Amino acid sequence: MDKLFISDLKENEKADSIFLVKNKSLLKGKTGKDYISLKLSDKTGDIKANIWDNTQKFANIFEAGDFIRIKSKTSIFQNELQLNISDAEKIDITGGDLCLFLRSSKFNIDDMYLELCAILRENIKDKYIGELINSFLNDEHYTNKLKSLPAAKSIHHAYIGGLLEHTLSIVKAGLLMSMHYKDSVNKDVMLASCFLHDAGKIQELRFNKNITEYSDEGRLLGHIVLGINCISKRMETIKDFPENLKIIILHSIASHHGELEFGSPKRPKTIEALILHFIDNMDARVNQFEGLTEETAKISYWSNYSKHLDRYILDSKSYLI
Image (cartoon, rainbow, N blue to C red; front, side):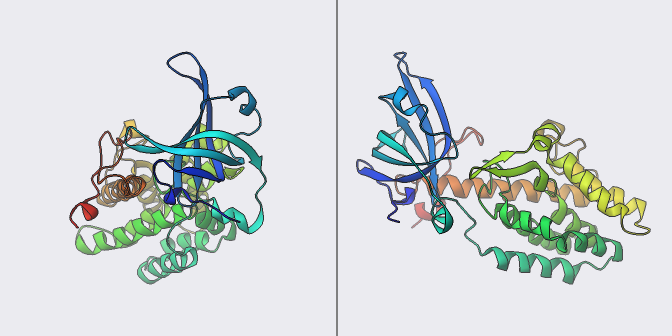
C-alpha cells in the first residue's frame, strides 16, 4: 500500500492518502456554518483536519475508528500543521496493513518484557512478593494486555506497548531510587509497587475499532480501585501472605497519583509510595514533552501550546544544535 505518513507532511502541499479517524465532531464555525472537525492518525502521529464544505455529504459515511482516504491540502493554523479536506471515502483496512496506522512503542515489545522480567526476578528477594509478582508474569492474559495496551487514552504513552514501556521505565527508576536511598527504602516493596501501580489499567482500557477507550468498569471505578481489587485477590491466593506487607503495597497503589484532587484516595505516607508518585509523574511528563516537541519539530523549536501542561515546550536538543 502506498502511504503518505503524517510525519512526512509539509505546509502547502496536497495530501492524498488513507488515515485512521480518531475523533470526529460536527461543529459550527463563527459564521454559523457547519463543519466537521477530525483528528486523524497513523503510526507516526496525529493531525487535526477539517471538512469545511459538503458536511451533510460526509457526516454519515464514516465514524471514529474508521479508515478514510482523503484528498486534502495542508496549512498552518496557530503554529500547527493541519489538513483541509475536499473529499473523503471510507476504506476497509485489514491484516498487515493495520501496522501502518496504529502507533506503537519505538522499543521492541518482547525485549522490553524480557528486561522487565529480569529486573524483577533478579532483584526481588522476599518470598511473598516474589510469588505475587510471578502470579502476574505467569498470567498469559495479563501479560498480553500489558504488552499491547497504551498507558493512557491520550495523555502519555498513548500507543500500543505504551503500558509496558511506562511500567518498565518506572521499575528501572524505582530500582535506581531504591539503591540511592538504600538505608530508607525497602527495595522489594519499591519494585513491586512500581510494577503493579497501573495493574488496574488492564481492566480500565480496551480497544474498540482500533481506538483506545475506557471500559465500563474503567469509567465507573478507575484504574486505582481496579488495581487494588485485582492485587488484593492475588494476595489472597498466596498462603500466609503477611497482612502488613499487603497494606504497605496496596497503599502505594492507592496513593500513586499523589493528591486527592488527582484521583488518589490517599496521599503517600511511606517513602516507597512517595518515590513511586514522583517517578510515575516524571515519566508521564517526560513522555508528554517528547510527544509535543516531535509534533512540531519541522516547524519550530517550540511546541504548540499544551492545555494539559499549561505551557509551550522548547525542544532543547534541536535548539542547541
